Image 1 (cartoon, rainbow, N blue to C red):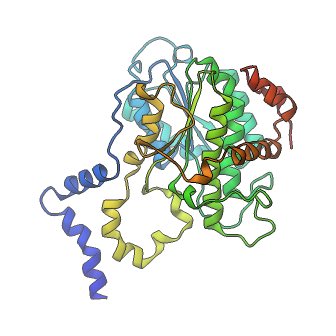
Image 2: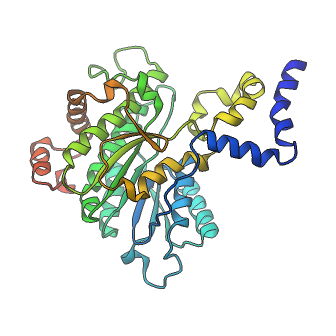
Image 3: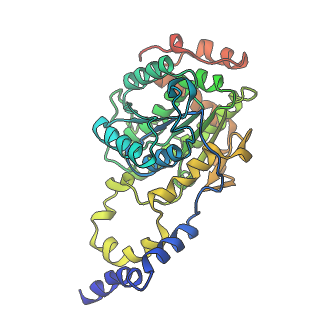
Length: 361
């Protein structure tokens, strides 16, 4: 017990020594990727961020709102961009977060919108509302996710992690492609994870109905699916002006890990806590890779790539397989109800699926 007490006090001793707090945070932030190197603004742009009421999503929205230099403009923001749309399942938390960000950044163009990625109906309703309200969409950040939850199913019967992390964003992205293309140089950012490296796509049992459920393997499958989706979408969007990239933001201290139980473990809190202080990012730093991919001028035209924090890297070999990416696309389209008969032809003609090409499953 005494050993645990001494170990748990290590972090406090470090932080309380002189300017320990700022030093520790600086060391941690530098070691885990630092801040976005680009100073680009987002004025005139409309940006959608899923899962933006907490963690990385919230900090992404906060930073992008700060970069709206037209926040004091008297011109109506609806027609001139500079809009941050926070798409969340819990509207109470989302409204609270949006008010907080508006007050802190003095940007009045931060909006809360309802989106439940575990419901195809909700995704379609959100996409319909956005396409009616927005003249264009410049950036879509597919940030929301769920990690290592019990064996839950979405409203439509999909395994929760695959359904939310992949299928939900797959449908959402396809429904918003028209608006992204209208922006001239739209960007899509898919937040994945280093966990994809041990992921495998089981086409015979994507929803874990035939084998014993493995919450970790299910999460890794969904994160691999994010990168395969990125690869195939980039191919289909070639020449459209819209780019798509996937990113591993780094290990970040957010609510994503609430189902793992680590934060409830005495061992984790006492023995590993001091080490996590230097290895785990704050949400603000964890948001920097998404911000970088959303705004950096030097990434214009870069598509179909995987970024480990702010650096382009090769993903795992299974994430580079063209046939797997194509097959996953086709199965995903069937599962969420995209009509494949017109879909491929529309991509070849450099247009995209519209709301009429979506049917209820």
